[in-house]
Length: 167
Image 1 (cartoon, helix red, strand yellow):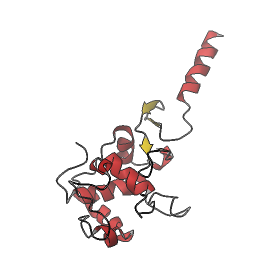
Image 2 (cartoon, one colour):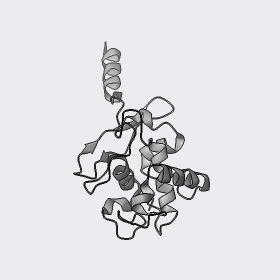
Image 3 (cartoon, one colour):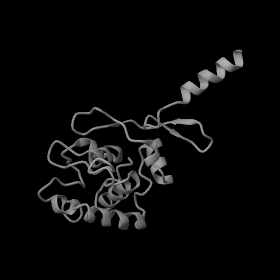
Image 4 (cartoon, helix red, strand yellow):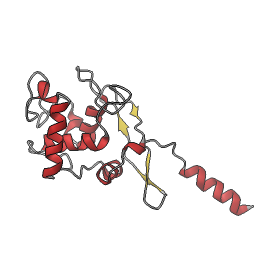
C-alpha cells in the first residue's frame, strides 16, 4: 500500500503536460527547464517540449544557452532562414538594423535580447513594435520556425555581434 501511494505521488510529480516547464532527459525523468515569457507583456509562454527535438534545442531548453553560437554550419543555415522569413527586410542583411531595430547590440530595443533566451522569446512570439510571431504554428498552423531554426537564426545574428548571448 505504501509503495503504491509513493509510486502514485512520484508519477504525479513527473507529469508536466508536455509543456516547457520541464524537459525529459534520456532516462525518462524530468529536469528543470527555462521558463519562457512573451516580449509584449512578460506573460508566461508555453511551447510544447516535443518541438525541442534536436540535441541543441534540448540543451537550450535546459540551460538557455545556444550551442550553435560560433558553429559555421549553423550560422549558414540561420542566414538562410533569416532571409527566407524576410528578417533582412527590416533588420538589415546582418541584423544591423534598417526599418526595424538593430539586433547585434549593444543597445537593444528590448534589453532582454542581449541574452539568447530573450532573443528566442522575441523571435518566437513577436513584439508590440510590429514584428509578428515567427514560431511554428503561430504564423499559420503548419508554418513558422521551429526552436532549432530560431537558434540557428540567433547564431547568425550573433556572428555579427560583439556579444554571444551566452554570457
